[in-house]
Image (cartoon, rainbow, N blue to C red; front, side, top):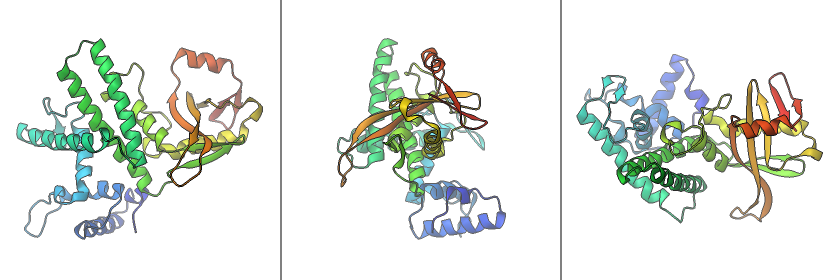
Length: 319
């Protein structure tokens, strides 16, 4: 039995002791952990000691490797070569440890670049979406560096940060689906089948939760208010279900939806495509593309020409 992300956050001390011991036992037996379980236990291992009274090295467990990567990535974000100062809970990290950490990140970069970003034959859908979006961002980054007259060293530094970030996002997305959440959430609106899958999840995380590594994008970035990045597909699905209850199909827009949640306006964009899933017949669906808080004038101009419909005390839709 796997523990859910919610269970892993329980505050009860005895329950946490039981969860911790069960996860350590699974690690020792090399039993498969979910991403969330591995994140939960691998970060704690340094607090424990083995039978020889030595600190436990999480990296001796293969399932902890990606968890350590996530921690190191956040520790060295925009500093993945370790050139600048870095700090952990014990204070300033010394030069020797920074070199080890930079080499650790570099090994992940080289492996991820070769097996995912440059791989044209990916069958894993999440990795394929990650690779497509990352390569699109690299292309944009190259244009940006040319425009700004940045040299190849600066471009390569930013490119490496982008690729490391893509792996971090992949693990974030995988953690969500690894818990058993649906790979495709479906809602029918005005006789149209809306699909929420990893495409929109990856796109939104890349474009709107990545300010520090996305200087090449001439747009604003956000930790999107009212939306939690670890549960984004569920929250988008809930918003569309609410929308389906009030939409007038005579004024239905097949491209976008504007809504206001509390004091923030949002735009949700979608696109009609031909879905061609392996083992299934082709069908026309509307795929969610992106979600963002409205800040640009031309979006507000569009909203001005629409009629607000109140759903509840905090939510309004525009038609």
